[in-house]
Length: 336
Image 1 (cartoon, rainbow, N blue to C red):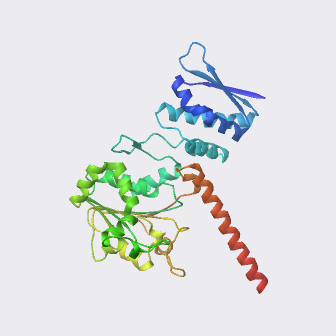
Image 2 (tube, helix red, strand yellow; image 1 turned 30 degrees about the vertical axis):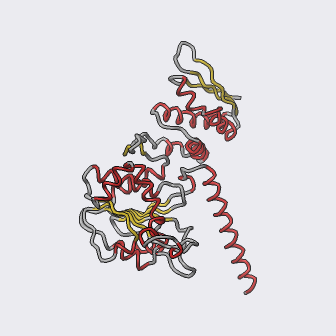
């Protein structure tokens, strides 16, 4: 049995680390089979946290707690997801990678919310957008692909690096029919663009966002509206790119003008194209992977920052899909 201790700087830091009803510490105890207790530190303002258990597991739990202590000290909100992420990184012997995450807030939303990378994958994605003219972000739902891209676009606009933002999506029907929706064409298209509006409202607030859109400083439009245009001095985001055709993707990428930056986001596991129709995103990844100035970034389930059940859902679907393909392969093999 081994024990290890460290002191927090204040009871509020201890409270942030332990979480409501001690749920964060309970998760660490279950993950590493250790016991964690806290008591007032001698002659100190904060508390003394003690970890006991097997030597190796105590060390791993200590590394998670030290990371959370650092985040709490920087006033970073600790959540279920951030605790689970820290545990998984330490379990994978990636503590050094975990410590690369810092409190580098690159934008503050209209509500005063600091926008920052929550995972190493997100940090690499943000850095790729900073350094490259075109960044292609691929990964499952909930990894922050679109949200971070919009934040980077608004930051570039405020810093006068670009003069306008253009957000676009292919209007592909995902099990529903545009024609059955009420209203004119714009009313039918708006639901497809709603996630982009939501991200902008988070960054700018409703009134400020509306003014930018009215002045055409921010433009939100279906992908078809991009044809025939050359987009200079713009930050352009193509969302849900897995639903583009190869022809649409080529058309979009060749809209790039002087002083502009492009971010393409998509999830190749959620394509809504008709059966047999090839995804323009999948083809672009193959064709452009070695082109200088274009960065490819792939997110994993570990980068999911929504409810932790989303990560489990993604893993369950991935497992099902692998088993389905394996069964299909085995049937074909037996048939031959």
